[in-house]
Length: 496
Ligand code: AHR
Image 1 (cartoon, rainbow, N blue to C red):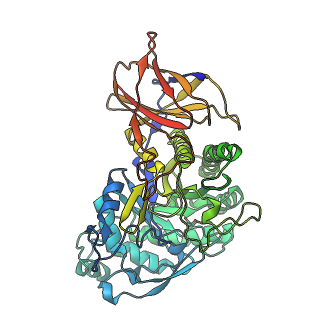
Image 2: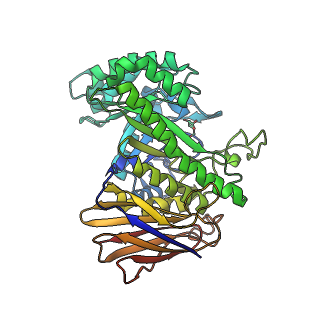
Image 3: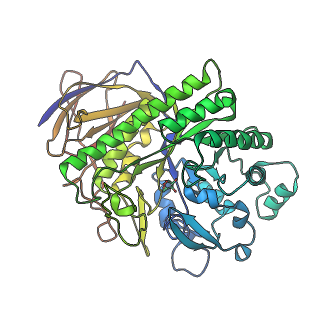
């Protein structure tokens, strides 16, 4: 049994945990958008909201989904928004392309449908624009179509398509991974291209928040060097981080278990380094540029065409679908700790992806729908959304391979309530945790996510194998709360 003691530093708030840090990402890739979210308005025996699966939307609403990025990913740099408006039966059928897949795309899920989905979910929309095969004019037109109240032809067209009121989409991605699938640009060329797009977009809607495409440290450095004098043209700088070194999705060994959690942990360093570069580029300017970690999550070798180390473990054909285990949920929890610590510089984060694909919280198979342990990781963090993040210090305890604390935590305060989420990363040892939260007198609720094995997951056959349970919280008579966490577990305690 690990004995550990943690203290929440209630007097030193870090900043606000924006709802945008709990964002999601829906790409036209595999069965994420088509089949997962959207099943169409035709003759199908599934309860629906318009063409969206009711069971999926209801589950997502309860997660919740404060922000949703669409339509890609790599898909975005092939996407022509005009294909997805107007009478559905007249819409163009295009080659739907992302990540090497080619499918027939009937464009039945277009801009109006996406906005309708966001409204159903209560999500803020974030549109990713096409730089790779598009033009500044095409993206300006999409922005005008979505947001203008001036009686232009595009405004009238939007009204004729059912939306006289502007959609008011604030977040606009200027391309996606333009160092790779989005056009194989070098950083300097993209930085100049970005300037051109952002200048023109800003004229169309000065309130639009523009997201520039980042990559690794070398690209980011070069981008900042090139655009140092043009930083006000950028509101967010996008970086992606997939955790890819965790071995097999189910059959992983201990080293891979800890390796994946360490990778999730290291996401924070990447955010920190990127923030330093942005800070240096901004100099004394008052303008703010946030970091948009607009794709993050676990990407197992079964669901990708490359690696590890030349070994191809992927299923044939590649569907970008993978088993989502308790380990993946713990990795998400580890990342949330970093998101909270970095909430002053991280302006959004989007899990990749929302349904069926990669680190999905919701899965479907025919008429069946179930949620993955990662879904519950999100639910455990709901009390932190919009709250003030508080530092959590580990006073003493054990560590795990990779030297992270075996038990770590994140905390926040909102409307007089303090929420603390704890993770016991240890594979085999339970932990007795003493927790100090000044001023707390009462437990409102405590919930835990764990399972017999970190390899456990849910499925159509066993949808409730891994789920949330009540956790009992005691007191030690010295002003500290006491909880016992089983190995590989995550829990949230709400206190007043
Ligand atoms: O999420 C899958 C893919 O990963 C996205 O299309 C791309 O942006 C990234 O490489």
